[in-house]
Length: 451
Image 1 (cartoon, one colour):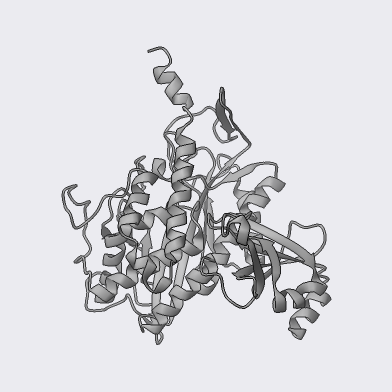
Image 2 (cartoon, rainbow, N blue to C red; image 1 turned 90 degrees about the horizontal axis):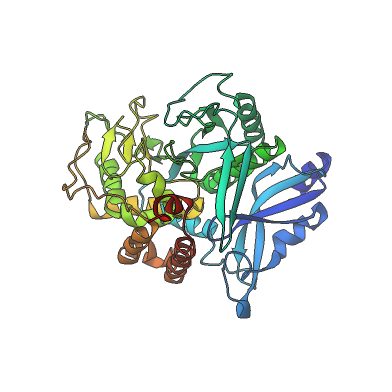
């Protein structure tokens, strides 16, 4: 602690910005002078849990957040030098971890996987797809609602098009993405590359390198935070909405996963033509088995299902394949050898709470290994719709919540996902659906006003 304090003082740091996630994954923060860091580490910082994403009701709202100094970076968006880090939520005694704290849930899931001997190291690689808009206006009232987004890349709008890896000048934000990557690497997050994505209205992608699971949840939050702030500093808007534009590509957050034990890639086998071990297939089988329930956490918004049902390259059926981009579970065709072998889960999007989404995916895979849910070898083409080995993804958030309600036991075992949290999640999301569906859309006025 003394070494850390000296380093921060020598670096000119004056403040600490303590970030934490509510249940939905939205970031909140508390800022205090650097001199208060030792006190915050020892005692925590009290806050109102009823006002922060509904962790508690008003009658028992007091909670404590304690900083975790393992993933600290200098926040580039504060005028006074400020160190940014994430916190864990505790009960008011400051000693008992809050069972519903998303960071704590992911940590317990990782501990269970290690305890059961499946892996001693878990690596994940998230792909971030997002749109950049010059203007973004939206409003919602009883007698009026609407939105308007615009992009300098759409002159004139050409409808459905493919702008994958397009170069400047059509790619108007290459320099801005480079600035984003520069700040990400300064924050300790290694980046593989950035490029223009398929969407012709300034859709972008930034892909990190493989991240240790202990860092991954915080890193996902940091990536989104930095991307949004760089965009706003450039007087534009970044959005991770899964489907902000009709007839254009949606934005996902594909998750690549590797498991390692004793310096051996658990998913790799030289005996299989696709290089996948039986453990890998069982892990995939668990995700296939629980994929519909997983969507409640990996795709937790009504907008998520506009992407999953909107065609393009978004998956609609959960099968495993090599190279096939319509597969929900894909071994990339360019990945070969024990060092690099991994699979990619293409269903999630970045509106998810990353801690809960990662924890749920890992528990589904673990359940597959425990139960020997081997779905068989990788398949080339999309299976028939009546092939009950491979479920179809939910067509709506309502359907996903119903699936979670019917298939939550793999999450709730040993209290990893507290039953109260699952119940609150379902009820909160049902209320969200009811609120959104109570408003007619502009498209409905176009279709039905004159009937």
